[in-house]
Amino acid sequence: MKVLCILANPKPIEESYSKRACMEFVNEYKKTNPDHELVVLDLYEKQQEHLSYENLSNAMKNYSNKMTDEANYFSSFDKYIVCSPMWNLTVPSILKSYIDHIIVKGITFKYSSKGIPSGMLKNKKVIYIGSRGGAYPFPLSLIAWDDKYIRFIFKFIGIKDFKKIIFQNTDKDPIKAAAKFPDFLNKIKEYSINF
Ligand SMILES: Cc1cc2nc3c(=O)[nH]c(=O)nc-3n(C[C@H](O)[C@H](O)[C@H](O)COP(=O)(O)O)c2cc1C
Image (cartoon, rainbow, N blue to C red; front, side):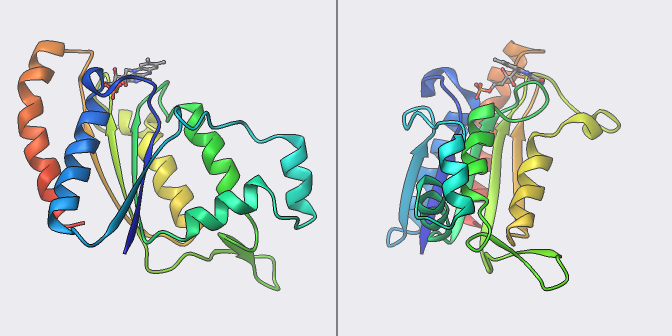
């Protein structure tokens, strides 16, 4: 079993709620599944680029290039952990840039003869580990696109098994948030054991 953990946060771990939560998840996961291969992909360390015209036009001609290589590598995993802060109601653009590289026709999705797209990745799962400065109970939940975007873009490529766990109010009430974080980490452990 191969697991890909995608990090989309420039902060060092000590300063990031989502990264600390994610690393707790990863460490617990490794304890529960010592024989699984877990790769951490830090998009800032990797210096993930935006999609270039060169890569885009090569992909259109079906050449092997950054997009196809990235998409094939991404597809080789069975489970995905996506770790991200909420930035301006969605995920940081570096994560979107990565997603732009791995959504590739013929690798992660295809069109039927009637032109209907369908995801090509089957029997895989994803968990979204996020953090937000505020809280988004309904109807504000309608404008919180971080988890929804990840859920629907993974669904587009065939991954319907989606779970999320989000730590909220980190900026709205920092003292309360810090006090609540140990409980959140306990919850993270439970999610990890069941992933
Ligand atoms: C550029 C930027 C944009 C942000 N936008 C939002 C936002 O739209 N909604 C929100 O609730 N918090 C927002 N925040 C606050 C972060 O989501 C919050 O600080 C969160 O805890 C960051 O996660 P981290 O601790 O893992 O870095 C923003 C923070 C930054 C730096």
